[in-house]
Image (cartoon, rainbow, N blue to C red; front, side, top):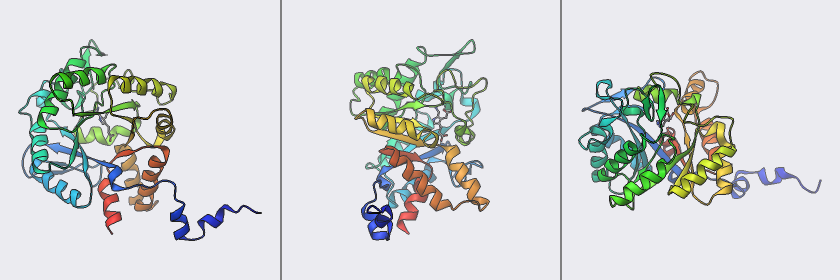
Length: 323
Ligand code: PBG
């Protein structure tokens, strides 16, 4: 044998030298859940070690995460049921606790990058990402609400708008609404290839946002489809997306790779709640090693081609590096 691949694996120094993919804290975005009120730190049983925070405690949590090197956060609101309505009116009320929290976080940490979620579901009494009319999720009537929501978030100081709703044409509508309102520097990270997945369960527990009827299959993508992700990506990029996201990450590494190979626009991936919860559940039973599984999972997403990764592991990963 004149070629023996094992020679490049014979010790840690050589393995590290030829390592192809590397993951740093700078690649990670930490999703956080916000609840109205004071002094609230509420457990989410299906998302161990992740909490619903009130803004006062969230600021402290962010401060400790910033010390660990996490610079980018995605914030989601847990809204009380009685404040929800069919057209998600609360989502663009400038006095709502979510927009006030965005202002406060950006005031307190001007250097941090803050991303939002744009979709109706956290504020909708129907629990769908778009408007429901006669049992159907209507596309074009949803768009102006998404635009209002985006402008309100930009006004509050958000850095990156994250449309997660999968309505057709929304990136273009949001981009021109932002530009018309003078927010030309506000970025859009579009949930481009977002699949109708079984792995969102714990997130819907966190926000109590599961659909009241039906499923999300008329707007989220069919897990069997890959070519369709190219159509979605091309549209989002033409409409003005600064980054395109694939979600979930693990079952869709091929899709991440496909977008990375076909477009110059940065690609991100959402390592979703169910993917995080699975690792916790198996580690609790002693069936896998938590840190090793986390590292392998995150690295595989990077290797597939993701520049940025939204992950509930962000703090654990940062802590594991700091140790
Ligand atoms: C809502 C939204 C969802 C997630 C992010 N934004 C859930 C859904 O589409 O039902 C899921 C994130 C996760 O599971 O971690 N538009």
